[in-house]
Length: 304
Image (cartoon, rainbow, N blue to C red; front, side, top):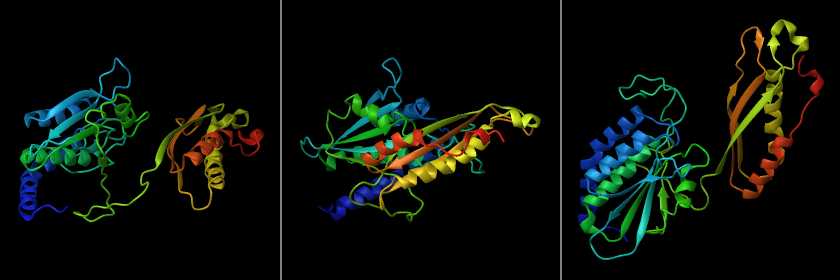
């Protein structure tokens, strides 16, 4: 059902009145990013704004351990137009990435090595704005809207799984959840939808290549983990690709390789971090089993 013209105009006025605040919130969050499950200041910032509006808030959500403080938050906005048990949820992730921001804007990250490089600052600000707008217009609608501020989207076990495990989505139980994500491919003001699966399962990969390091002048005596890693990566890509049925989407990618040696020192280990993304659970399980078994080359030559 399309909203009436007067109601649509009121929505636009309410949101327009919040626009400057939403920009300010997003820039504040961008300037003060926090890593997964460390979003203590972020969730406190969100809670303060919601409480100031008189919105019901449940804190200490998504605890990594029973004794830990949860960095997630659930808020409920109630419509007052009529009695209704209907509930729908809006979800935003809040964590940043371990990336050092290089930029000149006034709101660059002040937390060295941490940056909102995936838009979670925008997601949080948008759901904040939507929740406050709905609360200010609560006499115009019925039911409830749950605001889900999720921590740890970028890190296993994932804040969403902890929120579900804790049962905080059961009362009230939403009939659906909208989890939006910004994308530079769409023009400002345009929203994209599609039917069926859209976001893949994302597994974190952590590899350690162990060799026998030492002085570069003693190379014949070494087992070079850098050379092994250089050969291992293409082998992983090639063998994983062979296991994927034609037309089945799959991404295997490694974004972090650390070989902490020196110009004349070969390290003992190389650390490699990456991601595996699949839509098929069967393919996911197959690749979980396959990747650790991949072998390549003649081990006797790796030191040379």
